[in-house]
Structures are given as C-alpha cells and as structure tokens.
Length: 404
Ligand code: ADP
Ligand code: ASP
Ligand code: MG
Image (cartoon, rainbow, N blue to C red):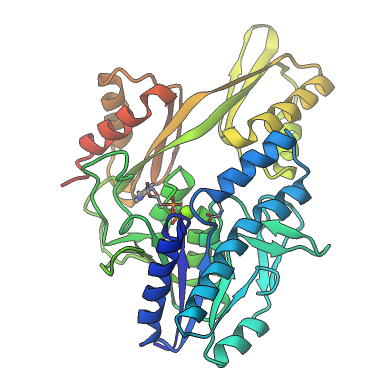
C-alpha cells in the first residue's frame, strides 16, 4: 500500500508503555506502507481532567479559552508518539491541527471542519517521514484554536483520509470492532464483520460511543471505508461501508443506550403560531441538537412543549427556553436529567412490520416505563428512567436475538 491513515484513541495511548506498543505497531505497518499519517486523541482520560479543571476554576468557561485548553491533550500525545518513533530510528514529525492545515468554522467546542490545507503533510510524507497529527482541533478564521466536539478525533481522521485520497481509514481502539451493542455493558454482544454507513450513523448518533457520528457521515459522503479494529492485536475488525446485501436478514442490527439525555419542558405556552420556530431557531443558533419533541394540548388553550437534549447542553438549553418563554408570556421551565434513551437500529425494520410493538412489549414485560418514543425508517428510540438503562439494553439484545 502506498498511503494509509491510522487513528489511535485515548485508551490506546494511556501510558508510556502503551505509546511504545503503538509506535512498534506503526513501525510494523511502515514496512509495507510507504506513507503513514497517524491521528491521535489525548492520553487516557486526560481531556476529562482538563474539563474538570476548567469547571473548578470557572463554572461557565469562556469558549475560546476552553478550546485552547482542551486542544493541549492531543498535542501531548502527538509529540510523545513522534519522539518515541524517532527514538526507535524512524523519522517522524508531530503536527498540531493548526500546523496540519485544519480550517474550521468559528463556533467553539463543536466546530465543523471546513477543509484541510495538506501542503505541509504532503511535504513530510514525500520525505518518508511519519506524520503524527493531533486530532480533535483546528483553526478558525480569527486564528483561534477550535475543537470539534467530544470524541471528535475519529472525525479528524476521516477528514484526513478524504483530504489525502485514502480509501480506508483505520480506527484503532480498545475493542476489536463494532458489536451488536456495547460489549462492556452486555456480555453476549456479538462482533459484526461489517455494518452499513446508515446503521452505524444511527447507532453512533444514538449513543454508541465507538465512533463519532460525524466521522461516519464524512466517510459515507466520501465513500471511505472505516475499519474499526483493536490497538492491542492484529485481528480483523469491523468495516463500516456500503453493505450490498440484497435484503437484510434481521430486523435489528444493533441496540444502544445514551445515558447523557435530559428533558426540557416549557409549560403553559399560549396556543399561537411562532413559539416553536422561535425556540428551536435559538437553540440551533447555539449549536444545540434537539430530539424527541412533544407538544401536548392542555386545558384553556395552552400547550406544553418538551424536548430532549444532550445533558451537557441542558443548562444552556434551559436558559434559552426560559428567555423565549418570558418573551411570549409562557410559563415555567422544567428539566429532568434522570432519563436515558434506548434505541434499536436496523435497515431490516423497513420491510418488517411489528418491530416497534415487539420492542415496547419487551420493555413493558421487564417493567420498564417508556417516557417518550421517537422513530425513523431504521430506528426506534424510547426515553426511559436512567436507572433501567442496562436492563433495557440487555432485554432488547435478547428479544431481537442479536447474539445469534
Ligand atoms: P477511543 O479512546 O479509542 O476513541 P472510545 O472509548 O471512544 O475509544 O470508544 C471505544 C468504546 O466504545 C469501547 O470501549 C466500548 O465500551 C464502546 N462502545 C459503545 N458501543 C459499542 C459497540 N456497539 N461496539 C463496540 N464498542 C462500543
Ligand atoms: N480527546 C477528545 C475527547 O476526549 C477527542 C477524542 O478523544 O476523540 O473528547
Ligand atoms: Mg472515541
């Protein structure tokens, strides 16, 4: 092979020993691959430590400074890995996102990558140097460092694959592939050989932390195969790709849980046009993703509007809702962050009626209360009490026979 992209996640780089193992693995791959680009995450849980430090000193950290801080984690990994490779006798260079030419939107903390100016990467590759790039970061038009959202170095890796004309992007992580559900939560989860972009995108968006959803989106758009594999052994992993089975043989391919969900409700909304538009426009402007919207008609012509958000966005969403509510004379804001969202995903459900009924009945039989429901062509999601998360995951994994 002439060129490849290899991304190593936090756990794979969590200690000096692990960085050495990763370096040896890269050197093995270099024997058969001329040009290697490595994308790295921050070591272990170091981004979480930085987040906690920031919050200790400033409950609402200034976004520019927050990004300046969080981006340092990846720079630690890239420089340590590059110096390890050099020490082992292999020319390598670390590049921050800025040095690697990553340009992003202005928005801090969840900026989208606009393009990569690859000149510097190409120059190093043509000299035979292994290029080690800090994932998760870029530069906006004000010359400020941005970060692209938690878990975002998967997306950086796929963007580099697209920008450097690679057909495959290797994501090395602490499990050996994509499973029917999180193997750390359900012990009989089964490894998948391949999974379609659409199913992986739904699973990732609905909480399967194995891949950043935007990485899957970018791979689909650019027809790049993502190979998710173990950083600890050389086994084949799971390929995320266009899967050409004539007909899916199961209604459900995977199940997932998102425990970082919260509900915001606006009470007593006057029944006049415009409020939903106003509220959701403002939330969108702040980059807050909304899911599971419900509007109930109450007595006396008032409505309640409630929606779910990621719990990280709860405070910001509640503040925006309170302001909008005040402007139009609606009532109080209620929030609840003791919920989770369990989802079943599968292309096969398009042609098989009764999947939703089976899911609701299984949850009901297990005495799990369904608080909200959302569906699309290939997914069914239920908001449930957070305390029932793992039980619900196991119940759905069993009822859809995913270990078979
Ligand atoms: P990295 O640090 O390499 O980016 P992550 O922690 O982001 O690793 O992702 C790997 C984790 O994803 C696994 O340890 C596993 O617990 C979790 N995971 C969630 N859903 C799945 C799934 N369907 N298949 C495999 N792993 C999953
Ligand atoms: N280090 C960042 C995070 O923890 C990015 C990543 O791991 O992909 O969110
Ligand atoms: Mg990750």
